[in-house]
Length: 385
Image (tube, rainbow, N blue to C red; front, side, top):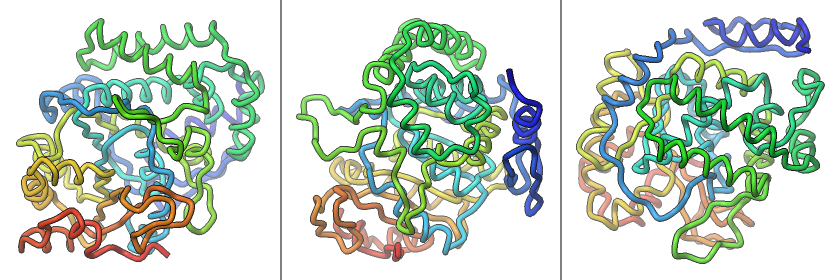
């Protein structure tokens, strides 16, 4: 049974409030996103997905979760620069949510060359809709039973939520119920999903069910990397100030994302960042909405674009996006290993997160300053500490 205070708090999270107001309801204080954007209808959401998307492509990894244990290391610098609101653009699975929770964008576009990533984000969208809070979301994602006292978990730290999931046995009945509910919701969202793609979504759910919080990023044709973080480690990661900042570390952050998903403002699309359409079309949609880019999260995609000879096309598309002095690019660098050859590397982390303003990227790219990948990862990085 839901408590009145939890219902009030959950409803409040869906209201389009504006900063700096904040209201306390029950046990949780919610600070609303600035000038919250109005909702899109399901049909408008599906039309936008279709308008922006390109034909899908191939990448040799499942990308169910990130392999970037350093993903939160840029947050302090982002706060210092004042990265907030606007439009968020990112690649990959749910590491995007942690950046979005910090930035509080008015709209978000998740663009990835793999159509499977779009399907996984439709799965996330359904789970956000079904879940009252963080513990229910993580339980449904991993196929564990939802606690009976779900509303009492709102103030629990992420360490206790992770411990609860770890101690809970996989629940096949819960898993099957969730799988059926997800399929129904995916049909309702209006994005065309074939029967084969519904099976793909089921396979994604099965992977989370089978591995639980031990799930890791895997690649096809390559041996598993021992140093890749599992889901548990990603959930418990901290920024460089020692703050736990995964999107499930805070109920307020989770409810913000739940609201954004409920208003159809997290828009997953299929596209190549160096392709002829998707990124440029995102820029046109942003201009139509009067939004400036806040974050462009590219992971290490630029490494592959450099290797394929398509980086210049990507850089040209970035220069067409509407941006300002607070717009940034987040990238990941995997060249340093645990001991780190990059000045920004943190001991104990195989990946290195880098932050650059879009202003400096656009200027350097325009004068041909990115001849090599080393040029890209060593020039114009913001200090993270």
